[in-house]
Length: 159
Image (cartoon, rainbow, N blue to C red):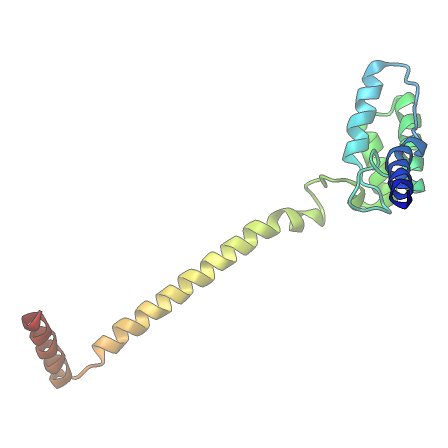
């Protein structure tokens, strides 16, 4: 009996909880506006949640941003104007795909620059090792080179 009560409570929480969530619906004057709304809500990041877009977030700030987005779309603002307004208010962080310019150039170019730097370090390391190897061979005296050659010849004869 006790297990049945716990199972009922768990099912109640799992299935009824999402039904109680607030579902916002906006009426759009044009179907194209609704498509733009969906695209922009997926493009804009919730300032509070940080890892969710405003379409998926239940935070009050996300609800305010969705309301503002609906209002701006109905007023006839373009997508660029809306994104510029959001960036001006919340910073470049509010966009999932930041623009290529300003400070974000560093973020866009950092992986390429780090890869080039790693490649440069690898080349310098290999070059210094090859120089050290050739310098070591060249520094042998004539007697040492003759002895090395005789040891190599002996090793070839033994095998």
